[in-house]
Length: 346
Image (tube, rainbow, N blue to C red; front, side, top):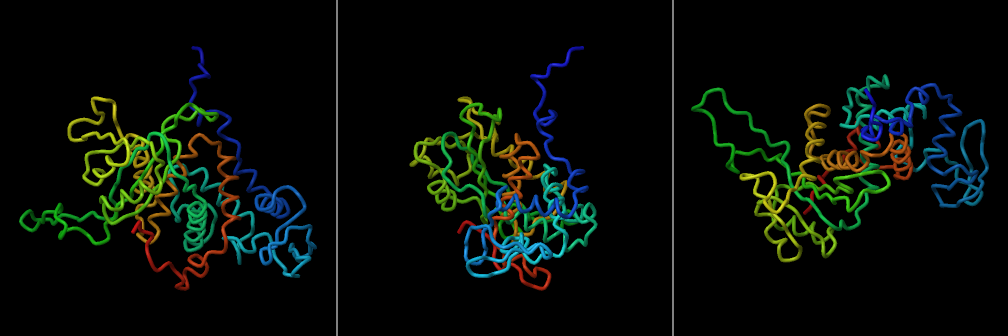
């Protein structure tokens, strides 16, 4: 039987495997230090002082693996001023954590990460969230253009029915729903043509969290993140009615068909929610509302990089982490230094 290589899925090809976790595990301390330094400042000998911003070949204190700035005399390390500042684990552990996070295409739980790294659950929880925070801070917020698919999905709103039928309530009514219920809203731009990475379907994904799918928030997001002249595809929910005044808006009634007679679907949004639900049910199990936006954006990032090799994703996540400043929400998290408010559209 002939093997048709041209029809082979990208993820089954050798090009998709350009990162070896085994190689990272076998790294020496010097090799891990050099790789971390390269992710942050490139392959040259110049470094940037996180205090004054001076870029130069600063004095390197070899015994401490630190630099001293030639201008302000500030002493800094390879993680100073980054999301991994004040780290207690070896640098190799952070690189392996990013690699494990990279290879978990449907997300990874903190418990599994703690087992893989042999660290406490608390350590793994904060480490995974630091990576998600880096993805959140460096996401592309430029306007989407072309054909845009929109939809919303609800989380944290399940009300368990009572055992006896006479005690059950109508869970469709607002007064009987949980106050923790939130809507994850997604906008996905369709690939205009088959690009260099042979991508079809969604090209770029933006996610937001709101209390419910409503006209005010949807109109606000569309005006901010959708370029003029774009085509919007959505379902028959009333939240999308005002979009007809500003965009070429096409609708599909899911009570009658998944695909309208004119070919309209919002399948790109549904495709995102397929991965998002798998991350929820199969990995994380529970999304805290304080960090729901970070989880939603992680699923969006995994969708947008689905045709990247794991080596490319590892490098991209690593660079985002070292470009993220020390974050207040994740410095002393278990000592009570936590985020106080949700990231909602309003």
